[in-house]
Length: 571
Image (cartoon, rainbow, N blue to C red):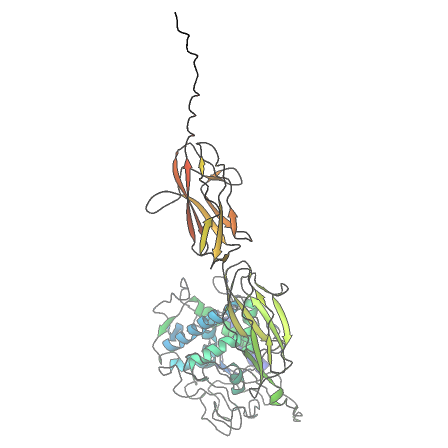
């Protein structure tokens, strides 16, 4: 059975006594997650709360504290090789599991350097909403009724005045956390996503909410394959040691294995079916779920969930800080029309990366610091060899990155544009470097290539590569002595090259054309077997040429003619 304590805790303002009981329960349970170390040793927690990012969210909404069962499923070979059966707790409703995996794939395609695991979304979704009330969603992934947190009216919870005119939470006076991933409306306004492609950003849709949570966890330059970055990401979602331990426990549990179950059949934490879903627009605080501890008044939620951040404030109401006008408040950065980023190795990308900073009204915002960072396994760089540059937006709110130059390494990498020092979603661009190519290769002369057995060829082989009739410099070429069969293979006799140690080789790789597109092959040697042989040259891009080599003994020279003086006749 699951190790449990309190069923429900609010974040950040738990009394010392309750916190002590919680820690004791965690320690005594022996449940996965107590040590926060997976069986394989992956993703170990740092063990204590790392300092949050300077501008990271610290919203602390209530969450369910049920821990995974003591007996976890065996860890499968891969995250996609799921067992078909297992304990009730290891089952994840089909639509919910699909949404988590779809979010992981989307982030892998658009922000691969973050390395978001879907099991982390599953762990957070478990403690925030019991996997959307056990998968009670329609065919599009939208909950049958909104999942709403308590009214944040300052009575028992923080005071957050309405920011969405009740559009998401049904309350036009105060805000409430919304949806299976428990975003407060002001956070959703920044991070909301359309994960199911229906043209809407709905916090009550699991596909939209899962993708938004993924992008939120990947904010900045986090790499979630690193334990410290994963801890920071979880703590930015809810800055509480107890929350981190709970999420880590479920993360470890789901990493060991899980299985798909029908929608609507998942395990629902006690009280979630009714206690969490307060009627929209209720003017007073709704009753708490059984086993819930309410935070003290005066707490201050900000990001997903809403809740408390610290001790009880003094009874004297604090002075309300001045608010920044919406026209001067940075709401985020977005792509400003950047096209496809592709370039051949060694060339500059023709497309320039351009982003726009927008204010809370959707208009342009000038003088915003934007940092462009190259991430991934690449030798590409901005002009001057830099892999990160910081620039300010202009009066139209846009800023263009310096020219991006491809290195010699082919493949894909990511460029991120972030609002410097802000915990806002980055704009991620995928850039592709293709190897230098040639579509034509030919000899530079037509000399016959011959050699006597056991000697070297007197003439060298020189070729020139072109691409679309232009010189193809730096193109990779492979040279192979081949058989004369219908399906040629490397020959084991006849002409050959020598490697650096003087050994016989009949295939040369990593050859490259020069700046003028030409390539001169090393010396070619003949063994003692006479005959006609073939040398094949193939370029990156598919251009091929086959050259004939002859090994034959030289013709014997004819004997010189002798002249005889005729004898004089006798008589």
